[in-house]
Every structure is written in C-alpha cells, then in structure tokens.
Image (cartoon, rainbow, N blue to C red; front, side, top):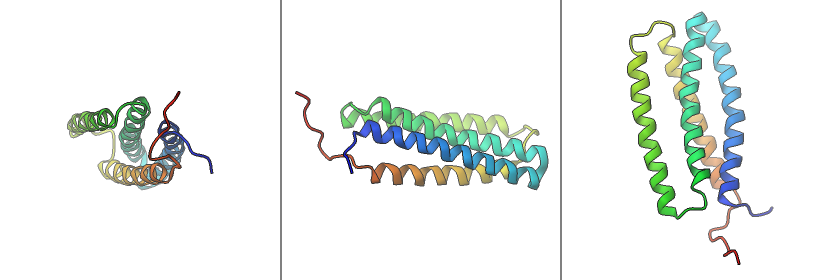
Length: 138
C-alpha cells in the first residue's frame, strides 16, 4: 500500500462521496415517488441537495487548504461549517411555507443522506494511508 498525501485522500473521499451521494439520491427519489408522489420526489431532491452541499463544501475546503498549516485547515473547516449552518437555516426558513415538496421525505432524505455521507467521509479519511509527518520537499 503506497502512502498518499492529505490532498489525495480528500480528493478520493470527494470522488467516492460523489458516487455514493448520487446513488443515495436516485434511491431516495424512487422511494419518495412511491411514498408521496411528485412532492416526495421534490422533498428527496431538496434534502439530498442540502446533504450533498455539506459534503462538497467540506471536501473542497480540505482540498484547498491541504498544504496549509493545520491551524488554517481547522479555521477553514470551522468557518465553512458556520457558513453551511447559516445557509441551512436560510434554506429551511424559505422552505417552511412552500408547498411543492413533501416535508417528511425531505427530512428523511436529509437525515439519512447526511449521516451516511458523514460516516463514509470519516471512514475514508481515517483509513487513508497518509503519513503523520510529510517529508520536506528539497
């Protein structure tokens, strides 16, 4: 097994996360269609889009700041988390009075997709063969 950089590990996590997110989205849309019709489909799409946004922003920040100091990486991840929470609150506030989607399918899809992608992302990052110390480039 060869050692990879932290940026390569984050890119790998992003790629596998993208494929998994796409598969879960298709599954959620099909199940939601049979459970609640067209509003169920929209609930699944919106819920999955929010969860996917969380994954892509986190992975993107990790890739962009991979060669930075660990403090910069931590600050960037925390800042992106705060931004995602603000965006989530705004999206949910806007969605509150909308009628084009099913609230139950949105909630179920958002919960299952977010939890599943977080577990997958944590597993991929923690199992990546990244050295604790990266050698100096000379």
